[in-house]
Image (cartoon, rainbow, N blue to C red; front, side):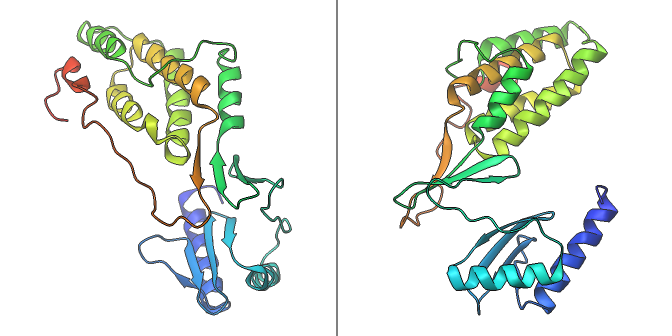
Length: 237
């Protein structure tokens, strides 16, 4: 458990038992997503952490099944005033039935570790001035210290997690700074610090699924953030 072989063995075990013993079907284009038409139960499973969507009867049926197959940590229900902690994210529901997913507590933890709990928030996650500085230092052959390289790797990992879970507004910046990380320079650390300062002001933002609304997620963006890439000599958007 914890390496690639262990993860593959666990997935095969979970998939086999849910499909052959509980009657689920696994989504072929999104592994670890399972659906039981008979019980009307949908399960999303991140490694060994299942998140289940079901009505009362289906919920009881699923828990009885899963507890018979595996050791579990018990049952937790999402309801107004009763939040769920899922992969260190918070899932909450209001009285109207709107469901929210946020990373506020994790962002506050990151800010505290960096000494930015009381910092002034940045308006945008990425800025041309930082790109110019990074490009200039890389062109000059400036090298970051080993400590700075390790800090870059840790902070980039944290930002990628926040991007992939609750804050898609970070995606452009994280993508650019990740591609520039082949040659880490001190300015890259300053750019990431700027991105965390942006999160200080955006930490309460969340993804919301409004009750009764099924239009899905709609995103629009300037293709290259008004010429952002041109700063480092890149011609593509």
